[in-house]
Image 1 (cartoon, rainbow, N blue to C red):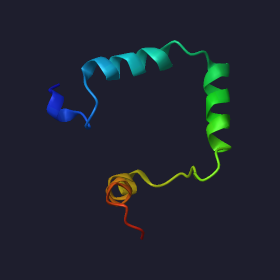
Image 2: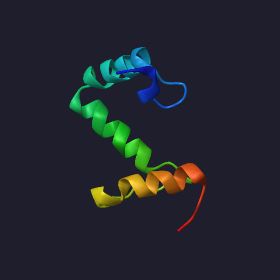
Image 3: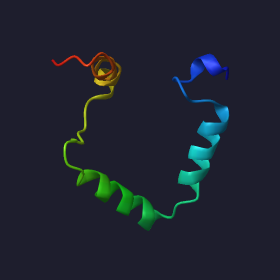
Image 4: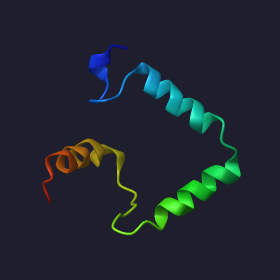
Length: 66
């Protein structure tokens, strides 16, 4: 994978460190992290059909509302 495949500020080393972080977590810690994320103010977690994910990401990146 080339650096052009990563978002700005990301590279192979950063991705590998992130993967290692999550691979070392046990199930209880992962559940606790998910629960804490759901309690953040000013943010919303939702389930959306996979087919819409790319379009939603583009809207967020542009700062555009629906």
